[in-house]
Length: 345
Ligand code: SF4
Ligand code: SF4
Image 1: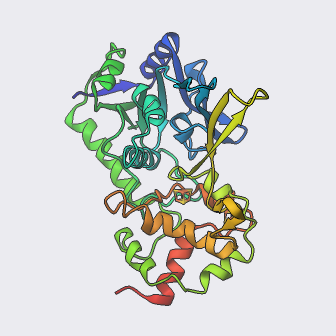
Image 2 (image 1 turned 180 degrees about the horizontal axis):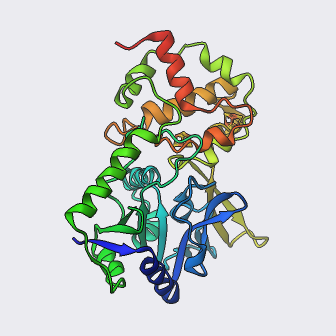
Image 3 (image 1 turned 90 degrees about the horizontal axis):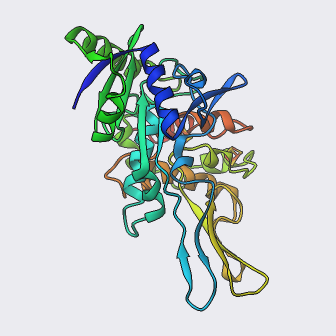
């Protein structure tokens, strides 16, 4: 697969060509913040962003989607949203979160709705240029990414190094007619960006190796920190909603007045919300805030890792830290306090 050097002006031309062909989503400014949205022009694209308000997961798992419509008497129709699209500007930590979703949505029951979108996507990832206020990807080994994308862009000053990882990526780079092969010197510059990001995307330092977290949590279930932190938790679910690795959903039927036809929808849910574990008979398995608060950290650091080969399901984007009004959601603060209390063995 090719590795090219593309001037920034030429990359803008590539983006405009893509916009002329179909749906292109990318990172745009939103006031003094950034978020993903549909691009009307390459001028809107901001690859110098620090972090987006929402992660890109909404393009693969929308906040609300119709899975099935039905007319009664066995007349069911699966609904697929199948248009091809290009997604530009995915940071390494968010790309790693998507890679984790790919594993999770293909396990147990293969999720054809998720993969209809995933297979129709061409993802252009990009290395971080400006660190956000709360990123800690360096601590989580997610500051650089090696796979999952179709193209990886790295800003080396006057140009990008663009590496194609798939055939879709090669086709995209072919639109850059003036781009040449990257030289050894260009690749050294790219390596320097990676080395810097591995060290400097670290506004919160985890005081242990990320691989130690499942073991730490094995010994932390009855620690007082869960009650202490949960005292000020609003159960608002914001930490779930902004997280690129949270993928829980609820499924509900919306039946029409004829009581025969309707649709089955699924929508994002969150383990911090009261009612998340409520089942028939009004039974609720985690009806106190401390249990819910603990569950989120266990989910990131122990339960999901056991399903995805030990990868920790927190990629250090820092979004939950900014989204939590009482400032209790920072996973590093919780894990470091547990290390202080329990130690490392
Ligand atoms: S837990 Fe927080 S820092 Fe970790 S991936 Fe989720 S939102 Fe980002
Ligand atoms: S930890 Fe913070 S963001 Fe999460 S539910 Fe509680 S108050 Fe809301």
